[in-house]
Amino acid sequence: MSKTKFRDISKRLFEFLCELQLRYGQRIVLEHDFFGDYEDVFVDSFHDYPDIGFVLDTARLDITRRAFRGFDPYHFLDRMASRVYLVHYSNVFYDEDKFTHHLPVLPEHDHDVNYGDAHAYMRYLADRNSQFHVTFEHKASLITRQQLHQIYSRTALMLEEQGGHVLIR
Image 1 (cartoon, one colour):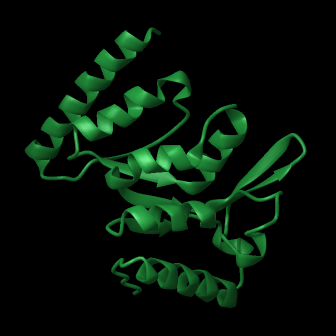
Image 2: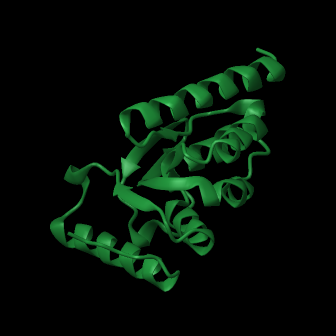
């Protein structure tokens, strides 16, 4: 599909989604997937239609970094930070030719090259946007209750340090 056609389809889609939001009074958010060579169209669509929220998935962001040569997640975050409404927060583990996703974001993984950079992405985003929501998207069976509290506390502290409002229920 040509870039022009992709841009046209994206415009029509975002206009339709805006109409649905108004009609039903329901917030619509879209999560990113692999956008290949059309990153600029993707980013522009969210800036042109700011009522549509963007969902950032930290594991998927890291997978994109490794899968697409030249993709810079920090440049992408710079461009999309103001549009992020929700973060799906989890990590990914790389093992030779495969990966495992929906892992908890644990401190011991921060500097381990076999894990993604989920915590670094979250910190980077929080420096640029203090108004997003977080869903912890890891598999609960992979961590203890103590580790879960550690993840919640560490994330809350990081967001508060960046000026965000934290509600833990």
